[in-house]
Length: 203
Image (tube, rainbow, N blue to C red):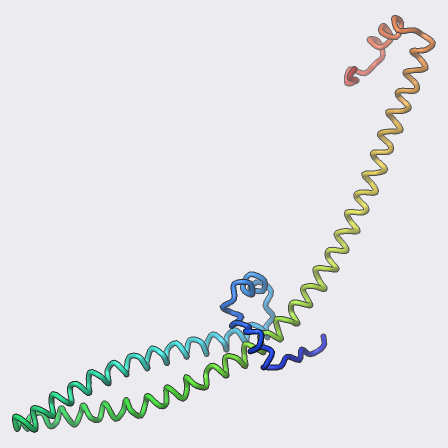
């Protein structure tokens, strides 16, 4: 099959969602994924999980930083106002924790900034694979539909022949019975019917 050329701008312009989150995509392709599609899905799932983890970590350490900042204010007050030197060690430890957080936050933000581009990249690749797979399925189903229609046509033809055979037989029965009725008369035919007609005959 030909390669699928899709510009990234088209994906953004059409606001194509993340396919593995799309109900329609899931319903149509869950049982029809190629190995290539499955690999891309795995990469997308990893990126989305990483994004969620980073957002969770960022939220957690930002809350922790607020707690630590409050702690520093309290410890600094103890040291400066109350001359409580016993808090120096804890104060230094708390400052180091904040320094670690201040290093980590930009790292998380940088990763979070880059992940959407990676998600778009693999979502676009999955879209191309999906289009290829869709046309494979369309061609396959059209072929199966044509084969099914041919079988239907054969059954219709056989049914038509059987119907015509039934009509012809009923006409022959009617002609033969009319002939006998014409030459024998109604009274005699009633006697003959009782003796010779099969019990399955109705009327």
